[in-house]
Length: 295
Image 1: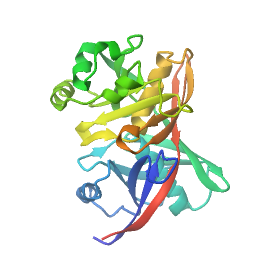
Image 2 (image 1 turned 135 degrees about the vertical axis):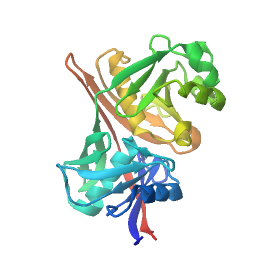
Image 3 (image 1 turned 90 degrees about the horizontal axis):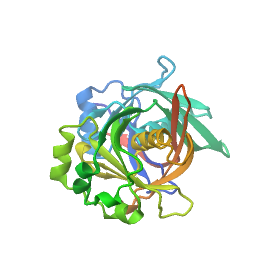
Image 4 (image 1 turned 90 degrees about the vertical axis):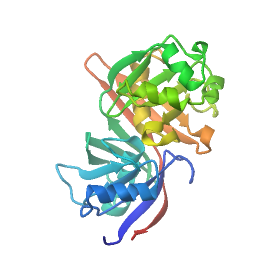
């Protein structure tokens, strides 16, 4: 296999070495699926992406996303991080929108610039699908919580914008920080559910400028806790407007994640619900950390 150029980026990061790190490979069209999977395993980030070609196909760039264990149809921080590398290293000039052709479909990413440099990237996600609901008693023992920690004004529910997550609303930051996943109960639960991973959120934050604090647990993907999860937060955005969490059918929020594991991230959420449809967008900053060649 010839040497391959790759880049390491921090996604949803306000500073270097925060947020969620991602490896992005370019010119990967000659790689087989097995080779991509092996490289993702060796890189050992939560996800690694492969840009198959610098040529457009059906208006977008073909991209594949892998965890160390499997290929994903869609994931949030890989989408933004890959779009950033496409703009910086392949297109090499300011463009307003880049479309990624993923297994889950085409995902457009809008790029906003400051002083000629990409500043904030936004991805428009698919309209959410609302699935199974759960009794608090089915979830709390798995998370080391009590039913009194759950904000029972809102459901515990499976929501998907491409990848499903179980959304769990909490009342307090103290409850959010107390969570410790019981792995036996977790794996017993996900044997019976479409959603395999969990997003827990509350309205109290570490940073007073932010609106929500989030934790995401994805042991099914080999990620005990994720520092920044665009796909999960897209599901959360849809959930918030579906149930009028902010008292209205639209949101424009700053969401913090990753503080508990020392990689604080910031995700920007926008969503609007109308009678006809729902639009969900997730945004954030991307920082280039390193570049190299894989041999």
